[in-house]
Amino acid sequence: MQLEGKKAIVTGAGQGIGRAIALELAGRGVDVAVCELNPDTARAAARAVEDLGRKALAVPVDVADYDAVSAAVREILDRFGFVDILVNNAGWDRIQPFLETEPSFWERVIAVNYKGALNFCRTVCPVMVERKQGKVVNIASDAGRVGSLGETVYAGAKGAVIAFSKSLAREMARHGIHVNCVCPGPTDTDLFRAQPESVRQALERAIPFRRLARPEEIARAVAFFASPLSDYVTGQVLSVSGGLTMAG
Image (cartoon, rainbow, N blue to C red):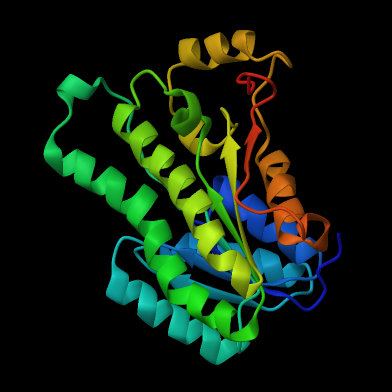
């Protein structure tokens, strides 16, 4: 699955799953634009990409801001010239019962998790259409497939990402562009470690493999969709959950 010379944008790539995706792609020969809200983690992830011998660009950006995304994509194109791979990974959530949430919380969850993907697809896909090629990988969640206690708004936003990915795949296929979706299950990231230990232990017992996913395991699924191995695959949703959820 070597991808030598390809150019990628990965959002939310400063830490966790996004950073693992950026490094997985870099290890396969891809130059990576690290799009991340936090400038410090963006620069650190970009340096890690460069340590693997690839070109990197740290681009601090709020994925929920369309004008900021448009400016970021212009900067990336000025540096890279084109984009082969777009990975919409940026996400945000806070676990709490729906009846304890407020509209301001809903708006932020929807803006980051759903509108962020819309913003980047709207600005990057035209570039891919011009070149008649491209791979878009949207990171949703198993919460969007089957629901998740305490993550009702987040699950709704990720469900929207799944439906959007399938619909966009139908529109983009005639242009030679693939759109697929990866749905991680519980993953061992800093964000997840902030949850109560009882939550972690309960999930580990529920997962058939009896452990959380490692970020690099999610990244490998993304690499498959970004590679020529998936050239006849589009509009698909892949759960990477250790068997916690299984399709019927």
